[in-house]
Amino acid sequence: MIDIRQATLEDVPEITAIYRDTIRTINSNDYSEKQIQVWSSGADDLQEWKDRIQSTYFLVAEIKNQIVGFSYLINGNHMDGLYIHKDFQRRTIGSKLLRIMESRASVNGFEVLKSDVSITAFDFFDSHYYEVDKKKKKSYKGLAFETFAMYKDL
Ligand SMILES: CC(C)(COP(=O)(O)OP(=O)(O)OC[C@H]1O[C@@H](n2cnc3c(N)ncnc32)[C@H](O)[C@@H]1OP(=O)(O)O)[C@@H](O)C(=O)NCCC(=O)NCCS
Image (cartoon, rainbow, N blue to C red; front, side, top):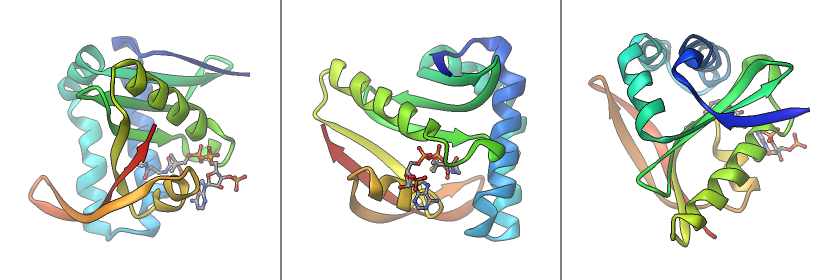
């Protein structure tokens, strides 16, 4: 029912729509209005998304040809993004993408998968046996965001 495949440049509109809408509806519970505005505006940096698709291990999850989530891995073992469509939350899509990223990091020769996790996603990673390395303030477009540097031994 859920198909997972590598992203192509044609997916950019769907990917950026999910990114924008998920941040505005799901992450908005945990971050300020200003933070949500700045964070979600990253959807408009189309060239950056194209570069990500071309230079990272970038997967999309589809249900009936609709993209319902995506994730990408940088530097072999750092999951830099995991976003599930606001209308498809808690349907195991995030878990499936995470499992594939863990396998990929292993295949890449790493023993750990790392991610800087939003407050919103903390419980998800915690329930998948990720441990906190440290609390981390990440700067994005000049604004500070509280995140957790988390990791799992593979
Ligand atoms: C975090 C996120 C990726 C999880 O994806 P998902 O597809 O909804 O997660 P799953 O359905 O695979 O979750 C499986 C299990 O993880 C746990 N879990 C997931 N989200 C949870 C939450 N918000 N609170 C508590 N537990 C959670 C639960 O145990 C869940 O099982 P259950 O639904 O039977 O209770 C998704 O909520 C999301 O897109 N969040 C916003 C974007 C974001 O912050 N991404 C991280 C980038 S830093």
